[in-house]
Structures are given as structure tokens and as C-alpha cells.
Image (tube, rainbow, N blue to C red; front, side, top):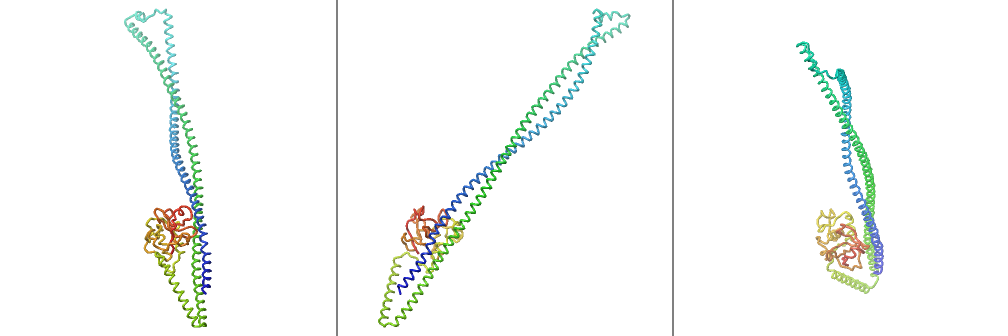
Length: 463
């Protein structure tokens, strides 16, 4: 009968072994997904850096565009002012031309008066020449016939002398005025004409400067549009990468849930195997009871002694095991290590490492753990109460220490970090453990290679 029970137990364990082997393999696929996720996050960082650079370029172009716009406004104002000055100069030139026209009319009148005076002077010169040049104003006076006639002749001579003098004075004044007016008008017209030419040249330069500024402004707007298009493309690329990250995170979550289902299936298989074994034992006991009634009392006595001896031996073995595990915590038979393994999945990617965290309900609700507090909490979810939360040194007092070569999912593993046994986590299989790491918060990490492989000190406790 005991042989039959052994066969049943072996069959149950083999079934469980096939179930628990899967998560170890799938843990590798989760690690691959996490690596893909990290690679995509790295690409996103690069794209976001390019976006920042492009936005900075757009800002610089906008500043340059604003400066250029102000310059164009100043140029347009200068063009307006210059055009106004040209218009004013044109008016002045027109007025000067009108003055010149009036002056020409005055000159004609002056020239006419001068010609008339020239005729008078010519007549006097001829008269003087015909008289032989001996006639004088004294002879005119001496030729008077009476005193009254003398007085009349004196008046006439005075008038003649004054007339001759006035003719000469007016003649000289007209000539001088003519020269002055001609010089003033010509100078003013020359100055205005020169100013007009200068203003027109300046206007041409300003117009050219405006043309160049407008072209540069159009170029800047084109560059800004190109950069804005680049930013839009980069943002689209970043959105696609973000969608990939979300998709991979969903795959990771789905895989973790699947593994949790497998572990739950293992638990159900264990329970079913235990029930089957118990049922087989009861059936075997019934059969033994039936057979024993048919045997002699001496045989019955022998069987009874044998059973008593086996019971005593079993009790002694149990006592020895308890004596060897002084640090073993009393764990309820309903404990479920698979829950301890998967309880922290909900915090993956949604938690933060806080030294001394996890010791209040608020910290737990917000995923704020240090390594030891997370382990206390995870085991508590599986019905394994380790008391009030301590630290990694306190956890050394719980569970039974086993060989690192016999690692099983649910075992507590220790690492030497800032001190001996400075970090702790829960082994999940496949060379990985779950814990609250300072760089990631709650996460599944690889302890078969890399940093954690170098710092695993071989200490393993089992519940």
C-alpha cells in the first residue's frame, strides 16, 4: 500500500513540475520585451531631443523674423519720408522755375530800359560830337539875354545834369540787379536739382535694401515652415514609438498574468494531488482493515505494532526537522507562495524606491517601497506574516536557509550591495527575482548575469 501511495505522490509531483517549468522559460520572453521597451524608450529620448532642438531653432528663426520685420518697417518709413522729401523738392523746383520765368520777364524789361538809356546817351554823344566838343554848360548860362532868362537857363542846366546822372546811376543799378538775380536763381535751381538727384539715389538704395529684407524674410518663413514640418513629423514618430511602448507593456502585463494563471494552476494541481493521495490512503486503509478482520489476532497484533512503530518514527523525524530549523517561521498551511511571487506585478512600472518606504498604508497604496518592506508586504499577501516590517538584517531571522543550487520560486534571496545582505528579493524562477530596486522601483531583475549576478551572495531562505 505504501508503494501505491509513493507512486501517486510521484505522479502528482511530476505533473506539478511540468507546470512550474513554464514560467521560468516565459520569464526570458518578458525580459526580451522589457529590453525592447527600453530600446524604444531610448529611441523616444533621441526623437524628443531632436524635437527640442527643432523647437529651439524655430524660436531663433522667429526672433530673427521679428527683428527683420522691425527693420522692414523702418525701411518703409524711410522710403515714405524720402518720397515726401522728393515731392517737397519737386514743388520747390517748380516754384524756382516760376521765379526763373518771372526773372526772365524782368530781365527783358531791364534790358529794354538799358537799351533806351543807351539810345539817349548815344544822342547826347552825337550832339556833343557835332558841336566840336566845345559846348559847355557855362556857355549855355552866359548866353542868357536877361536875368530872368539866366534863371531859367540855370534851372535847365541843373535838370540836364541831374538827368544825365540819374541815367547813369539807374543803368548801373539795373545791370547789378540783373546779375544778382541771375546768380541767385541759378544757384537755387542747381542746389534743388542736386538734392533731387541725391534723394532719388538714396530712394533707390532704400528700395533695394527693402527688396533684400523681404527676400530674407521669405527665406526665414520658409525655414520656419520646414522646421515646423520636421517637428510635426518627429512628434508623429514619437507618438508611434509611445504606442509601441504601450503595446509592449500590455504584452508584458498579459504574460505576467498568464504566468500567474500557471502558478494558480500549479496550486490547484497540488491541492488535487493532495486530495487524490488522501483518498488513495483512505481506500488503502479500508482495504487493510477488511483484510485484517480475516487474519488471526496474532497477525492483527503484529500489524498494530508495525503501525505504531511507523508512527513513532514519523514523529521523531518531524521533531528532528523542527530542531534543525531554529529560524523557521510558523506558516499557515494555506500559504500560497505563487501569490508572493505575483503580488507585486501591479507595481511594475508604477512604483518608486523610497528608503524606509512601505511602512504605512499610504506608501503601499502609492507603490513607495524599499527592498525589505516590499518583501514583507509580498509574503503577507501570501498569508506569511513576518511581523512588523524591519530591514534586511531582520529578514535573516526568517525561513529556513537552503543551498543556492536548490533555488525554487518563492525563495527569499539576498545580495551584498552597500553592505553585506544589503538587498533582498523574492526568486521567481528562470534566474530572476522580483524586488524594489533603487533604479526601477518594483521590477523583475536578472540575477543570472550582470549586476545582480555579481552581487548575489548565495544566501537563500525558504518558507
